[in-house]
Image 1 (tube, rainbow, N blue to C red):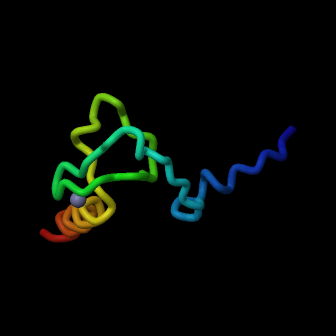
Image 2: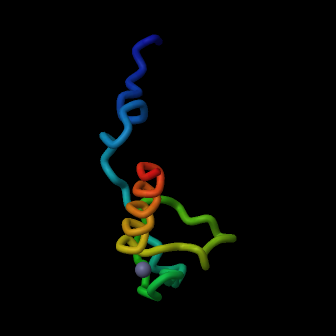
Image 3: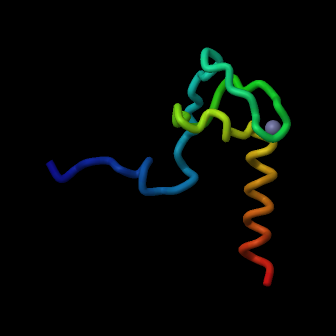
Length: 71
Ligand SMILES: [Zn+2]
């Protein structure tokens, strides 16, 4: 049983993005207030008020990346 295919998990960024339907949870982006219907991850029920929509998440990621690169 040494032939396990783990490629999907070992290669970062190569994994097809699975979206989770969260429209039942009534989540709103804590930055811009946009309704969030799906997420690329399962939301932590205790942190539903700290979830960002795709746009804001991308913006935050870019800022974060810039911070790490700069200085
Ligand atoms: Zn947002």
